[in-house]
Image (cartoon, rainbow, N blue to C red):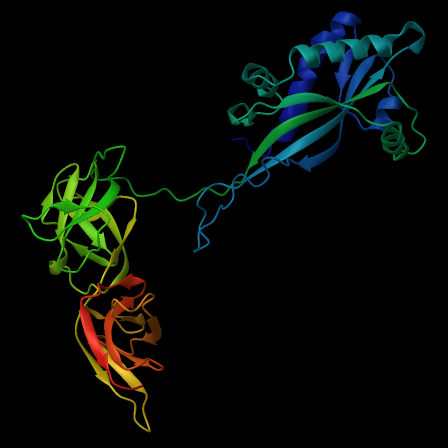
Length: 404
């Protein structure tokens, strides 16, 4: 970066750049750095460099934030980035066009070399500004010609009382870096290094299938129950310690191949019916003790875990309680799960359109049974279905309703 001598270094280097150019055009011409009022009163042929404005650099003004941590210690050295606005005025005999000759030399020089090189800075600071480190700035200072309107020029010159106008041109020098004297604390050195190489692509799940038992065929798009074998099909699934995350439960798979993982759902604790997500997790062990760390995770795939129901029972309505239908549920319902009990009329030859009734409920607590209030169901035998958080059971059980 650069220290607080940066502004003076830019001006001095610009002076040294223009000095041989104006001397070649007019022998004896020189370059000075005076205020406008003093420059116009100064005799001789010269170019005057006047720094009339500085401004924060809009693009880089906040590039170093944040510079401090939560404990107020310096994390990185604060750095101000500013733009310098110069007005270069030409002084000499107007009758023989000396100001215009000087202007031509200035424009030619700053167009052919529109930046401050490290060599030019080193030459400029060797005598006048020892200790300047502008040459170490991350970006060179560049000069860009600026167009000042007649109104801007008149305001600039009128700020100096009774100062005659001189032929002038404006240039922008940017960016100029100024470092703070505060230095961040040096971190402790690294004593040991443990490098672990991971594949560029992690595991990826393509689809989910299920299997009733080990010897049964694998089927896609069939209802998945809690005693089935889940098949996770994908790529890059195998690792030294592959795990499967179902919901919030991390389990060890029954078998692992690079393209297939099988999980026995009966061995997964805490599963409840409903929408469940599956991820393949590949932890990474590294460090002195080879401790497990978060590694690579696959994409998430959703499947519906369907409930199984059995032993439906009907309780008729009383004066103080409505009629209810209760069923045993596997896996057990969790507290707060949304229940929908569906009663389907038994299809008979004389019934064209069997009726169906649906009743909502909420599981009050974790339980292996579910009870839902019903009303308005005609007496008869009805097939029972239970929907738990959108996952629906099969219609294998029937219940006899007397009166509701």
